Length: 433
Image 1 (cartoon, rainbow, N blue to C red):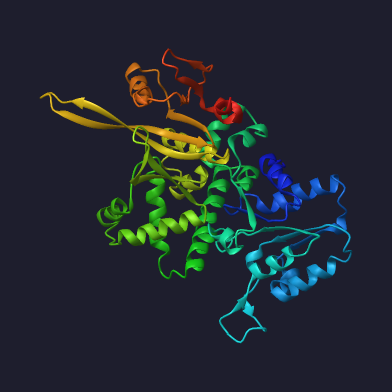
Image 2 (image 1 turned 180 degrees about the vertical axis):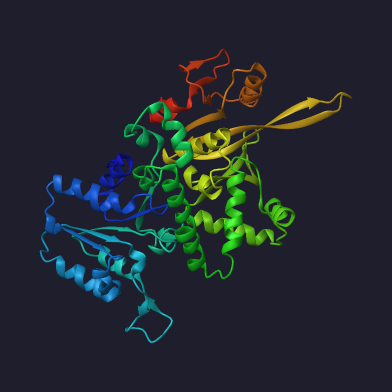
């Protein structure tokens, strides 16, 4: 089975020959190498590029180990660019394997040559178009563009979307949603047959890959257990407001472990750098300002989240919210958690203020949408609660309630639109109309 990853392929095609380094980042095992070395390579060949114009080196392969020396890598690529009148497309996979070596032209022993120096040097060649990927935390970090001194374009790869899974789903497609919120979108998962195989694979990704990367990159010793506990706590609380102080209290009360809020905050940043989790800030819709704390955290892949918890907490309400958040991010929106204040009076007539939540305030350019995630609105009281915040938003941007139920999209007398989760996930254009 081959997933076309058309969204990301199109991004590479648009950036072809633009004079900048194309940096493919994203959660490890989400398909970066396949996108570049298979899908994009096929596109180049079909468009008339010759085989010898594509220079591809996978640095994780043993036979290419000598190219991990930056001088050898640089020399080999330039030798293969034999014809100065031809354009060459350079693919360097797993670029983090390039070793740091002493710069022979500088007396200072602390000045090292790295993969950044190699790539920036190749960038100066007028007939080179450069693409790099990496699959550990040294490459999967939010500061990668800074390392390339703002001369790179990032193509962020996400796990498979529900729409991608649905197109190739084997069996009754009515089960696709359930399987997706259970196992997520890591490509290899969908080649496995049994729950046991899928569970083992996802759990191994955490313990043998992601956590190890965080430990090694940041030279954290003897903290693996703490990292795993924190990831479990965040997994249990997806869609819930929290902050480092609350999480520190949870560690002390439930695990009898004392850990400073600043340390927890640092660890969360490390998880975000590795694209394991994402943060949604709170935004005061009426006051038009951000509220610093608390915030919400979502897992970049629901299957990884479920594996961390041993598939014991499959609350569809929270998983649906997590999937919606991920899909909105995939579509290129900025996504916040909305807050709408409501002024009330208590039984004594005293004025009180109540904060109502909008699950997602979604922005892209001059577009804005307010979106609520609701498992069901069949009960009138539940319906009233779900739209309470939306009807108090004083602007005219579209307001949408996404429900689990299979419904025909409709709009009520307040202008609020309703759509089923599967229809919403299968049609990117729904909130661009």
